[in-house]
Length: 198
Image (cartoon, rainbow, N blue to C red; front, side, top):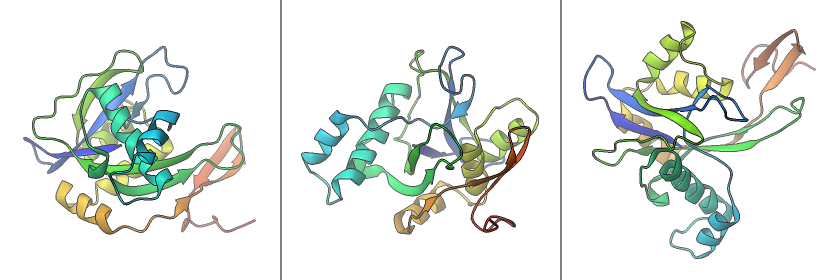
């Protein structure tokens, strides 16, 4: 759930909500992430109740995104506000695989995130550019997909441009490839040199 707002000050026009996973988290402790989580049976049940003209599984994912935003950051958002942005599938060589859908949405006016202190311990509005700079300085740990999303967002003029793109974007699943071994490897995306090599 990539939640965006216009920057209140500074030289950047847009900020994104980032959450830091708690040090005791089983998965990616201390890493900065977008709000999100797994679709559960209640999300499917809510999707089955209707309300939006979407395929039930797609609606369940949007319900999940809105729910997780509320649970992790105490921000209420309707599933209808979410716009598909991307879909990432973990490479085949990774033992635990995920099929993750990313959505973009505008933050409600005056949204003030509060971390749940369970899964996440800090919530912060930050520009994509600043997050990338802090990551380069080893002050903002990011996973590869989050890093790539922030790089893409930094190429847009403002949140309005991102949301306009989300309203018309065609989504195809992205499955990165890992080349090398555990001690020395690189992650390749479609279009990168060497991605199509066997």
